[in-house]
Length: 227
Image 1 (spheres, rainbow, N blue to C red):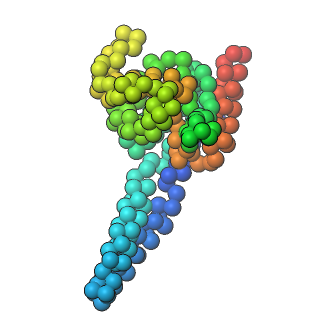
Image 2: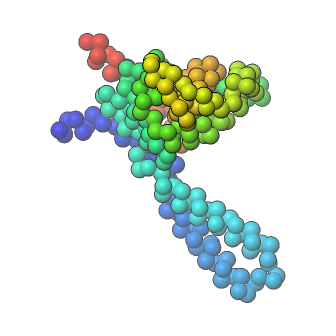
Image 3: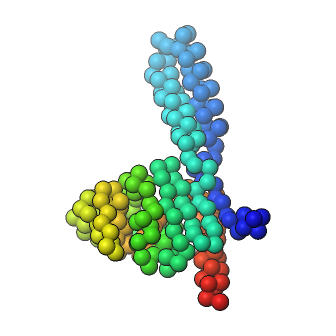
């Protein structure tokens, strides 16, 4: 049992960092502003409103960070499990063809986007394991990828619109947000060559280091299964 536990890699999301600091600082600034309002409201009304707004925003961001799951990825010899505030998906390693960074052209400059891409040999397992809430959330989170692809003429604008038509896959008909996300996934794969996009703020290390970890795991598992 202990050996089994040692083969599990758990990744904590970078997005949870500084949650306590932001919450405490926002709360402290808000209390100070409320106190200053009693004496300086007439003289510094605009400044106090600005500071109070910033305090509320800081407190709000800090509280949102507390809602992030403690673990964003659970990597085992069988699967890679992704946990998001709005849901999850679970993917067997056998479905993965390739893992890589995502280059793009922005205003004539070649840059690397803050995502890692996963190319799949089949959408069957991901369609069966992704939760509807996460599928719906990803439609919005990946909007910047879609808009960039449309701007670079890699996707036609009509094809980039959300499609809620039923999506048929291996005899199963998917509807609602999962169907819409599957259509979006196919379009993004035409532009970037990947089906899944892992955001950099879900890692606990630099993007290049996490890419190396996933590639190492993928290579090891493929080598083990071929022997």
